[in-house]
Image 1 (cartoon, helix red, strand yellow):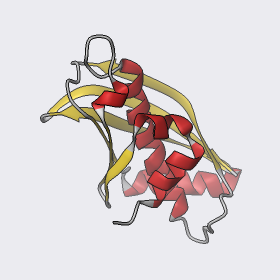
Image 2: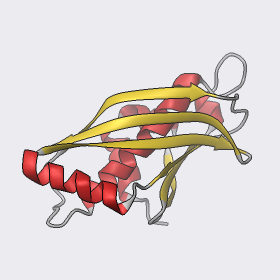
Image 3: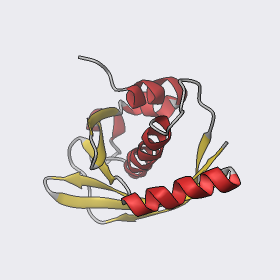
Length: 151
């Protein structure tokens, strides 16, 4: 089975993601879903550690932006842009008892067009995304974050 490019990037460039055991479960036109085993991300209460929950949700948002830039017209294998988190907010709603699963929906076409126009005009742009950690159909954590891309 071929390992998704974003997963390879995470494990090579973001050591925390590798230590957490983060993997790509689904990457399609609608969303990006990342998973990680509870065993590597548990706390003293034997539930998922809050830092791991916000990390995997943030990585899901980061991945949506990374894949957007990777598929940008004219993109090469050489990374010519930087992605950073400018701000984020997490709302913890319930504990996660099992493995971690974060889902970030892809932004609407209009938001992507506005983002790309700003990037082209100014050399940097901001994209706001929401990612959720879910378990058994229930949202455990919501993370909203603004990602900035610059050339």
